[in-house]
Length: 445
Image (cartoon, rainbow, N blue to C red; front, side, top):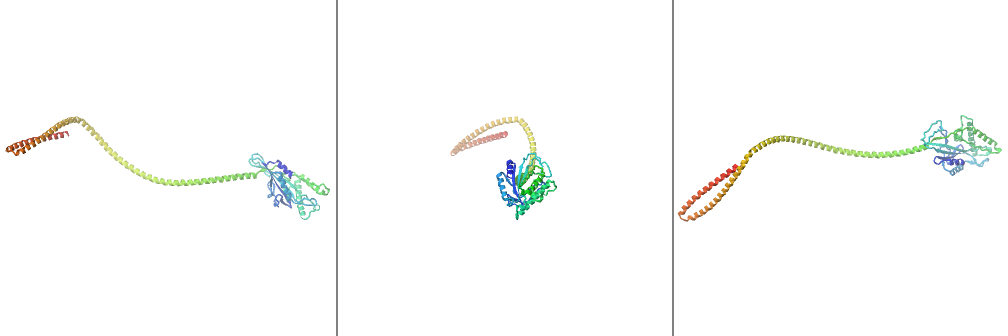
């Protein structure tokens, strides 16, 4: 066992290879775990398709170095059943089975045609993870014994009975395989059931028999040699066992599923967050749209009102425009009439221009005459003033002369008459001058 594991560990690669061991014993037709003694009566399961035998529940310990192997074997040997007989001081009372599980991972991108060990053969695509599996069973069979020679008593007799029964079943299976029998009685014993895929199939099987040189054990020796001879007739067909590493594939797929699940959850959370944001924005947009609709309706009403007002103002302005156009037409007619009248007046003015010049000259003459008359009037006024002063002097003289004689009264009468004449003459001249002035003014106008 140690040498086999040493050879395996020296030729394995830590990157692609793995080695694990299970150490069991078959005691009283009960499969027990030597590495975990609390595990007893472990079931034996056969794959109906591949015929592979497995022991679910048995401890499988992965090993990395030889020291670890020695420790495990020491634990197993300590837990194995042994007893002292007349034939052997440490006689094994059980069959010990060391199962070495080897597994090698092949490169994923390798193009490999794989034949699964079953009734179907097909080519697997090169993108699947492949694994090369192998199982090495090292079995230490308990020796067959005769009660009269071994001296077994009590419980040891029961142990020897089950040992001989399992060895007898193994011999029957070997005989059936050697004779190419259609029925192999592997189900007669748990030992043959456990070793079913190790002989007469696709496995490589080595059988080591031990004999004693003493003549006392001639019958046991001959029986053992004959058993070896029958076993040599068994023909095995060696076949490499490659299959899809579904465990690795499952782990990869599981990791991918976990990754995709987390990514999907993240995407869902992101989408949920985006959905919430979009809903929030939608609500804000709806609120804004409603407000905008209300404002728009108010603005539309105001615009309608302003439209009506503008229409009314336009109508009014059109009416005013029509009225103004009518007025403009009237004014145009008046303008035409005025232009006609103006042209006529211009003609009249041209005709009366000569008359105006004549009137201007006449006016200058009249003004000159008026100036002369005014000077004459001033002169007459000054004369009148002097006449008044003279008259006052005469009145003074008259008053002085009143006190004189009658002569003086007559003198005064004559003076009065002269004075009245002079006054009448002056008054008539003044009236004539005023009439001339008024006549000149009226002619000038």
